[in-house]
Image (cartoon, rainbow, N blue to C red; front, side, top):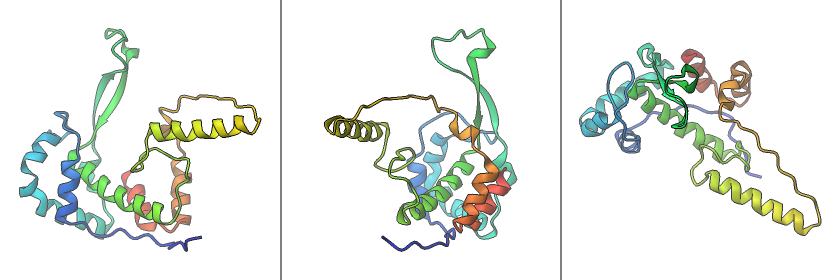
Amino acid sequence: MKQRKWTFKLRSTNEVEILEIIRNLKNTSSSGVDYIDSRTIKLIAEFIAPSLVHIINLSIETSTFHSIWKVAKVVPLLKSSSCDSLDLNSYRPDALLPIFSKILENVIFRQLACYSESNNLIHPNLHGSRPGHSTSTALIQMYDQWVEDVMDGKLVGLLICDQSAAYDLGDHKLLLEKLGLLGLQALLYILDKTR
């Protein structure tokens, strides 16, 4: 078994990473309270990248998350096209954060994901938010297991639950305690400051 490195420390970012993150942003005209959308950011990315690198690195070095980046513009979204648009229950709230907070979040996510993958902290059955994994790979893995079980003479049953809001139900205090046990104090501090 690979030896785990139990300390996690956020590292500085650079222009190459920031430009890649900006390039991979979804093209959207929606914006947060700053009224800056991803299309605009993509057009000016090369000009603002050095300043953005400085701001993000300062945020990482000081373990602070700029308060203005925490403010979301909440807009109503119709749950589905088949819903009655005149019924208020047909809408769900959507929080639009400033684009720069999403870029910082992506910098931290990449580092945490790399740390988690390299230290085998992610269960092999987790397919969400991982490169090379998707709902398709999850279905293929389950199907392969079902076929193997049937071939071994076992009965196979399936229970499907809607977990679309599973992250909303998470115990944040418990998450912070677990991150502390994993040696992720720098991330712990940022998560605690963003709540």
